[in-house]
Structures are given as structure tokens and as C-alpha cells.
Amino acid sequence: MGFSGGNIVANVRASWRDLREQARWYHVGYALFIAFNFIYLHDALPLIGQGGFPPATGMLFLVVFFGARCACAAGCAGVSYARPGSVPSAVAAGFASLLLVIGVTLSVAVLRVPELAFGASEASLLLALSAALLGAGDGLLLMVWGRFCATLPLRTTYLFVLLSYVIALVVTGSPLSLSPWVLLVAAWASFGVMPHLVGRSLASRKISAVRPARDAALRAFGTLWRPVLLAALFALLSNFMLFVSGQQAVEAASAQLTSTLVTLAVVLALLVPALVSTRAVNIAASYRIALPLATGGFLLLAFVWNGGGGVANSLVAMGWLIADVISWCMIAEAVRETRAPAFLLFGVGEGAISLLALLGSVLGYFFASRVGSEVVALLVLALVVVYLFSTVVLFVLKDRSLAAPGTRADERSEVPAGSPSAVAAAAAESEPVLIVEDRVQRSCAALAARAQLTPRETDVLGCLAQGRNTQYMAEHLCISENTVKSHVRNVYQKLGVHSKQDIIDIINADEGDPA
Image 1 (cartoon, rainbow, N blue to C red):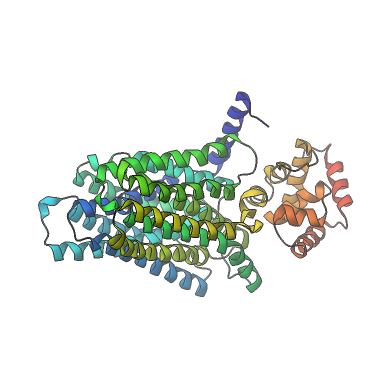
Image 2 (cartoon, rainbow, N blue to C red; image 1 turned 90 degrees about the vertical axis):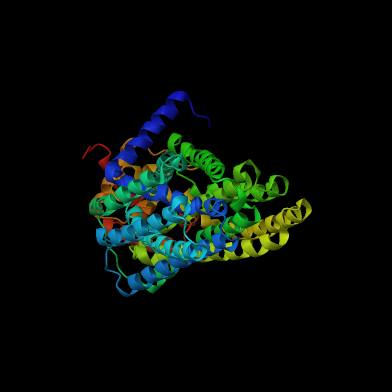
């Protein structure tokens, strides 16, 4: 069904209104974090190549960075498992910000202030130290912001992340044109207020965590391993591409401009459909964009190598960005659903992604030193990598449960119990559904609120109100039939009813009551 101009405007306004209800000005801290991640990580390799460092320096910088981030993520996961009740706070953000400020200062001093003229050994040592500090600070701040995102509905998380990327891209539009000292002052100021922004953000949301039961933990990891694996594979491919594409030889300003434009185009391609449609956000469908971009970048490698400001590398990197956004949103939703410690699930997920990013850097450097820029060799390599990567991704994607948080269950499970849109989203499907009018939506929402149903139980209530059977709900919510039956029993018990007809009768009785 097409969209009329009036519908598009109305939908955008509704999406913006929903986002404004959840977001506050101090949430801009996440966008600042992403902006400086672009500066201290994405621009590092071209600047290292431009600075005349030995070829292995770029690889070592990324290995140390992702190694430190992986270690930080693993440490956070371990601590969170041992102490699930611990809540991330502005203290953790303050420590992470301190590490990032020192790391950025060292990186700027070595890479952007040639007047300092460090010796080769001194510069390499300072870069390694900078990478370690940046990786650890980046990993810790990821965990903290992940905990915040886990308090948001899934649709809001998705929009929040994409809008943060847009703001970050605007902020980093031309950082290389700024004086290194202006860049340093901006970094000190941004990370100086970061603890306050994080503290206000966390304080504005209700946060609680428990050690999940074994079966709940297994279900969470069973749902998350696919998106995390895909993000990790895209990370490996992206960092592999950095070296095979000769990214170190690309002029830094040109590489940054190309990366910014490509990233902005991709982010807008993900953001606009989510804003103009009131249907459930199918985040898993974004893989349809990620795979062609990544494989197309590799095929383009054989023809342009590092030309066009590293456009081939930028396309491959977009595959990682999309997969990372998907895995981030799905981990956040799993934390919200299970109340598991955010540091545990985000630590395991981000640790795995960082580990394969590290591996990709090593493999990319190894192959680049032996392949060179010969067209035939690059074409053969590109075809082999595309074939292997596509095979793995398609194998993982064939499991329909991967799409669960992004297709059907997500839009409803993301909405807190009692929200009027909790049941409305149940009707927004491509399959034929019963028409659920506003008054029925309000009745279901009020019923869920009075009975204190969980988000998943609210999903089941919406299906029961439409007379759906167990098989439909299992397919619709992408959970097992036994799990559906368990949720149905809980709904019946909390409502004090014994059948779907009882629920429909209650809703019909409430139709004339605006309360």
C-alpha cells in the first residue's frame, strides 16, 4: 500500500512525538560519543599512513584498540555476572571519559601535531598507549550507553541510535579542517560533561537487573548469537578490507569525506522508512542492505582499489555499521525483556565483535603484504571472500527467529505494558488481521495496565483479543508454542479468566467506558 503525502507527514509527526516522549536533551551524549569514535578510530589508519609510520603501525594500533575493548567488555561481563544488581553510573562514565580524554590527547599529539616531532620508537609507543586507553574507554562507555538504551522501547532505541549517528556525522563533517588544539579542547569539553550527561540519562530511566534464570539466559543467548555473529563477521570483513584496500595510502581528508557521505546516505536509508511508516520496524530486514553493500565493496575493490577516497572500503564498512545497529538494538531489547544485567549481555556481544574485528585487522595486514594492488589477484581474492561471506551470512539468516525482534514481536514487546500502542502494533502486519479499533486498543491497554502484564504478556493479550490461536501466536511472536501456552496461562491467571472469549467479553464490556 502506498503512502499519501498527508499520511507521511502524519506518520513522521507521530514518530517524532513518540521519540520526544522518551528522549531528553542530555541524551545527546551518545551522539558525542559516536562522533569522537569516528575521529579517534575511523580516521586513525589514513592519518598513520599519512604520517609516514611503518606499515605495521596501523595494524598494531587496531589490534591494541580492539584487544583493549574486548578485554574491557569481558571484564564488564564477568563483574556483572558476579554482581548482577550493580547499576552502571556516572562514575563508570567518568572513568571511561578520563581514559578517552588521555587517549585522544596522545593520538592528536602524535598524528595531528607534526611540530612535536616524536622519534619513531616514541611515536609507536605513544600510539600503542593511546590505542589501549581509547579501546578500554570506548568499551566501558559502550556498556554504559547500552544500559541506557535497554530502558527504551525497541522502536525508540532504533530511532535514537540512527538519529545519534546523523548528529555525529554533522559534528564530524570536517574535523580535519580544525586546528588540532581546537579538536583537543572540544574533546576535553565533551568528555568532561559526559559523566553528567550519562548520569542524567540513567537517572531518568528505571533500571533494575537480576541474575537471569538459566533457561532465561539460554533463551537470551539463543536469540542473540545470530545477530552478534553476523555483526562480528561484518567487523572481520570490514577490518580485513581496511588493509587489502590500501586505506593507509588514502589521503586523510578525502577518506573522511567519502566515509561521512556514504555513512550519512546509509543511515538516512535506514532512518527515513522508520519515520514515515507506522508499521513495526523490521530491523532485521536491514541485512538486505548490509550484505549487498559489503560484497559490492569487495567486488569494487578489483577496479578502483583505494580510489575515490576509499569508497570500496567505505561500502564494506557500512555492512558492519548496519549489522552493529541491529545487534545493538536486539541486545538492548533482550536486556529489557529479561532484566538481565546489561553489562553481561552487551559485554559478551561487544566482546565477540571486537575479537573478530581484531582478527580481521591481522588477516587483512597479512594478505595485503602479499597481494598488493594487482587487478587479477585482487579480483580473485574479492570473489573468494564474497562467496564465502555470502554463504555464511545466508546460512545464518535462513533461521526465521533472527527476525523476531525486528519484524513482529519487537514493535509490541518494545512498548511498556499499558501503552495504547502495545495492542495497536499487533494489527500492523502484512498478514490478514482482524481490525482493532481505537476503542479496543484502549481497552486492551487499560486491561494490561490494571493486571500489570509484562510486555510479552501484553503481546499475547493483543493476539488473544483478536481470537488468535497458539500456532499463530508462536509464529507471530517467533517463540515456541510451549512458551505461548505459558504466557497465556499467566494472562488468564492475572485477569482471572479462563478463555479467549472471556477476554473478548471484558473488552466489549469496557468499550462504553472511557476509563
